[in-house]
Length: 86
Image (cartoon, rainbow, N blue to C red; front, side, top):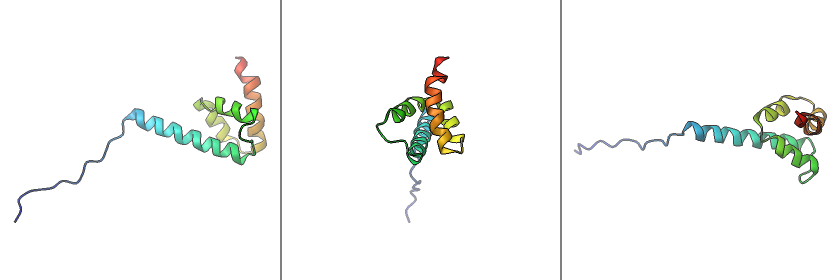
């Protein structure tokens, strides 16, 4: 009989920083999927404006919380021109 005890491999723990980075990346991915579903062509000026705005977590949340795709698209232009003047 073998007296040796084998433990299961330890799970790799995720630091808070890693968790936040992964969460942010997932949120950006989801927001970009919505942007595509809303019909914003990749490579367009509007698309690039959205990419820049979506660096900000508040902007991502605002975009994701709007229900009407047309309003979301209008919001990008409005935020880009009016919202960035602050």
